Amino acid sequence: MKHLFATLALLGAVVIGTPAWADDKPATPVAAAMESAAPAAAVVEAAAAAAPAVVEATVNKGDVAWMLVATLLVVFMAVPGLALFYGGLVRAKNMLSVLMQVLVVFSLISVLWVTYGYSLAFTEGSAFFGSFSKVFLKGVSVATLSDTFTPTSKIPELIFIAFQCTFAGITCALIVGSFAERIKFSAVLLFSVIWFTFCYIPIAHMVWGPGGYLLGHGALDFAGGTVVHINAGVAGLVGAYLVGKRIGYGREAMAPHSLTFTMIGASMLWVGWFGFNAGSNLEATAGAALAFLNTLIATAAATLAWTIGEAMFKGRASMLGAASGAVAGLVAITPACGTVGPMGAIVIGFLSGFVCLWGVNGLKRMMGADDSLDVFGVHGVGGILGAILTGVFTAPSLGGTGAEDFSISHQVWIQFISVVITIVWSGVVAYIGYKVVDMLVGLRVSEESEREGLDITSHGESAYHH
Image 1 (tube, helix red, strand yellow):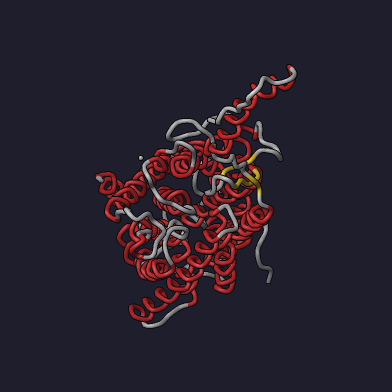
Image 2: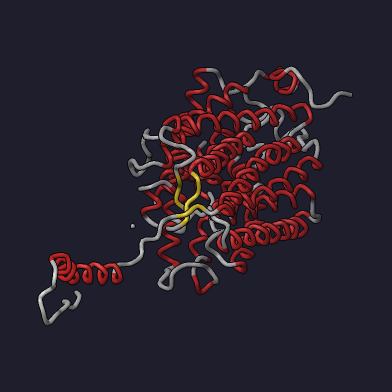
């Protein structure tokens, strides 16, 4: 824990018409009335011609169709993508426990999201929380609309709610990889409720919600570098410390039981991530195409970088490393995907491959935590790198979409502040959340249960029958 608080302390150190005329009087009262009305009519016509045309917001069926597909892709990321990626990395006796945790946490948060999460994250309120004005989706119907990045384009509010629901669900599910193979199932669920309520919701509001603190200060996070990856990575790291190391960690072999499942899961994550990133554009436009391309090439670059790094420092490249590199690239490009150019995306991806390789090796040894599936080493470290580099490669001089007066130094400072706030907020809430859970239901299974495996002891079933 000393290493964790030292890290937090260090980071903590650191917005008229021409009147009609006639020679004679009109012959009749009607003619007189018409003539006297002519100047007024001319004024009205002139004013109408001078006034800007009022353009009503419209809903494009293509945008709606794209957002439905994007939302489905993010569900695919979580279940089965993340579940299989994590499941393959644990020992066979804990395979089902991880699948169960991912599936049920995602389901739990989905229900909480429509109950109160959406209202507190995406309505007007304070700089840190929204309001209860849409709790239980009060006032939401098939006729209500949500904004996009184009003032004249809207999407149904229902699909925006569903899209953001998948973000909340997968963020909480990411955390379970840090304390896999030794935590109580009830503890996972209770912690998820606490952390979602007091950490995910306010960070999402601060970054994306109306009147959000970080949004108001100009922080850039297109698809969730801070909201999703740094947030979950820090919460997972705190959990790894407080739940404690697995029995035999560092002394017994704890190799992944199925790299085949891990490869399948990583591939599903890559496919689903196009919905995650390109869907965050909220419209089927060139902006979505940019995020799509950046997601593709940054991930490819990170896979190559991790593979090269392993070959250089370990003497051989591994399948686990290539899959981890792909996820690192996906994480790092997430905050930047909609604002950087393709060449910037390649640089971000390539750097993330090397930096996250260090994160799951050198940094992990320095911290001394048993982060089972390297949630912080990949998601935390990759998210921090991506958030900072967003402030660099959004510059138009480097191919980004920033304004002509874009200042790299100014934006990097804003990005750094947003990273620090996310780390501290998530760390504090997670610490309190774990302590509360430990007092109420306990965090860890018994030594006997851990040795036998959580599949049998927690769920009464086994992934494999011999």
